[in-house]
Length: 488
Image (cartoon, rainbow, N blue to C red; front, side, top):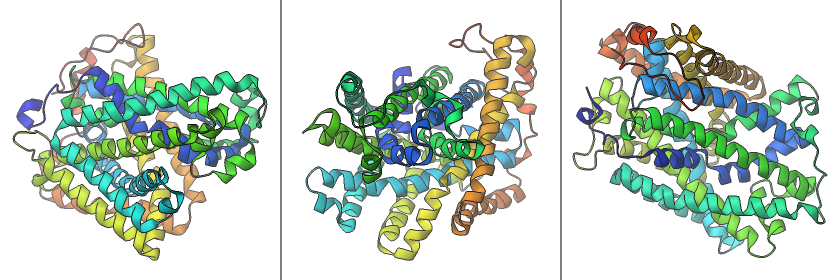
C-alpha cells in the first residue's frame, strides 16, 4: 500500500523543509533559555563537554532513524520500525512512549509560550499565571489549527517562526563571539572545558549527560513526516542529521558564551531565561527583548512540531488498528489526521488548564515532566537497537556499514539505556510512578488489540526485513545511503 493510498499527502515536503522541521523540533532558543542554567549549575565549566559527549551518541540515534526511515517509510517511525525489527509489543510501547512524552511536553510548553509573550509587554503581566495560561492556550490552539490545515501550511509557518529564531540566534552568536576581546564578567576560555576530567568522576558526568541529552530531543519529527517528505525516506533522514549537527553548534556556542560573559550569580539569578540575560550583555538595550522573541517563537514552533509527532504516531497506530481506527482517518482534502490532532489537543488543553489551577495536580504534572526523559530514552534506545538487528546481514559488507549502521547507533542505544538506569535513582517516588505509570497505561490498548488478533501483532520479528541481506553495500562517505529494497 502506498502513502497516497493511506491518506497522507505524499511528497508534500522538500528536503529543506525537513531540515527546518528538525531544527524547530529541537527548539534551540527554548532549550538554551530553559536548560543552560541547570546544566552549568550541575557541571560548571564542564558544560560544553557534557553537550559534546551527549551529541556523539545522539548522532548515532539520528543515523539509526536515517537508515530505518529508508527501509520503512512510515509515519509511525519508531513504532513501526521497532515492531518490525524487534517485536510488535516493543514497537507499540515505543510509539506509546512518544505519544506520552509529546503530550506531556505540550502541556509543559504552553505556559512558557504565554509567559514569554506577556513579558514583551510587562513583567507583571507575565507573572499572572491565569493570564499566561489563557495566552499559552491561544498559541496552542493556533498551532492546532495550522496542523489541521495541512502539512504544507504547517511547513510555511515553520519557515517563518524558525527562520526568525535562527537568524536572531546566529546574529547574537556572531556578536557575542566578537565581543569576547573586551571586558568580561565570566571565566577565561579553556579547551579543558571540552575534556572529561572536569566532571569530578562518573557521577558528575552522569549528572551532566542526563541534562545535556535532552537538549537534543525533538529532531526526530522528520521521521514522523517521512511519508509526506519527498525522497522515500532519504531526505527526511538527512534532514534529521543536519538538524542535530546545526543545533549542536548553537548549543556549544551559547554555553561557552554563558560561561565567559556571565558570572555564576547572574546565571543562577536568571535560571528561567539565561538567553535574555545574555542578550542584554551582548547588545545592551534591545538585546534581551530580541532574544525573548527568539525563545517565544522557538517555544511556539516546537509546540507545532510536537503536535505533528503525536498526531502522526497515533495515525499510524490507528491505521494498524492498535488503537481505535478513528485515529487512522485523514481529512479528505487536507490529507492530515484531523481526528488524532483534535483528540490530542483536547487532552492537552484539559491537562494544561488543570495543571495551572489545581496545586496537587500541578505537582503530579511537574513530576511527569521530570520523568519525560524516561519515555524519550525508551523509544530512542529501542530504535537504535532496531537498526542494528534490521541490517545485521549487511553490517560487515563494508567499514562504513559497520560504523554508521552498527557501532554508532549501538553506542547511542547503550547511552540511552544508561541514562534511563542512571536517572531512576535520582527521581522521587511520584516522578517514577507518573513517568512509568504513563507507560503502563499503554499496556491496556496493547493487551486489548493483541487479544483481538490484529495483524500488527501477528508479524514475526525481523521477518519483514528479511531481504536486507541483498542490499547494496553501505556508502563510502557519510552523505551517501544504503539503497535497500522495499521491505516485504
